Image 1: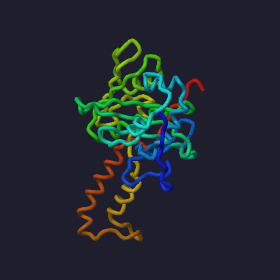
Image 2: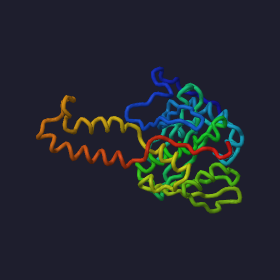
Image 3: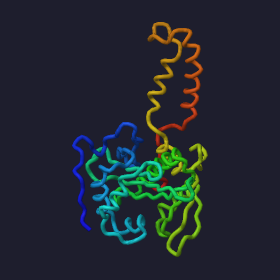
Image 4: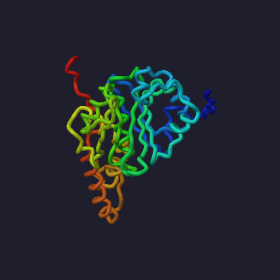
Amino acid sequence: MSRTTPAPSPDLGPATVLPGQWSQRTSLKDGTATLLRQIRPEDRTQLADGFERLSPASRLQRFHGHIHELTDRQLDYLTDVDHADHEAIVAIDLDHPEQPGIGVARYVRDPFERDVAEATVVVADGHHGQGAGTLLLGALAARARAQGVVRFRSYVLRHNAPMLALFDQLGGTREPESEDAWRVELSLPSRTRDLPATPAARAFRAAARPSGTRGLRHATRRMRPARRGGASRPEPGIQTELTPLADGIEDWLVNRDDRAIRWPADPTA
């Protein structure tokens, strides 16, 4: 079936983040500046192009079958999501945003077990081994927890060693689904600090954290009493109410994990 794609908005490039849209700027192991954000219908063309560039092996690992082309109906389903029962996070190369994306992670909520969702991740062949899958899965987990999902379920082919290793490092469990695949269950803890102390979990935690704490830190400084010669601060009466609030916000920020992604040194390098 041939594809007909709508003309993209001239003002909405792949690296554009819409107001209210979840996003996170990060980097891969090789330093590639990367934007993680929610998928949108305008990603249709890039998704189709990215699929066409996938190797047969990558297509098999993602779809568990030999698919040669995405139909219009499939592209509609994959890009026009409700961000609650069906969510997808795309990874965009910020230095080359016009090219097909780095990868995409997706969950679809189970209609009978509402706190469980099936999760999938696919990464472009040229970005394998750079931690993109871990970052995408971490971002997807953050969105899933916000929507009441507490467990991911994935079906992973037995020969897909990198994905199985990732789930193992995150504390996932597996049992045979068929002769060719494992069914993997991954609990999503309410606190990222409860994840295992593994390299993959550190990157997973970093990707799961939302952006924007700098503004909160600035706001808490403005709530505190002025130092001599410093900028103006709230009146003393208001200050009595604001200081405890500032303390609470600071405690929350301090107790968060460090936002920097510290990739472990490669022992084989």
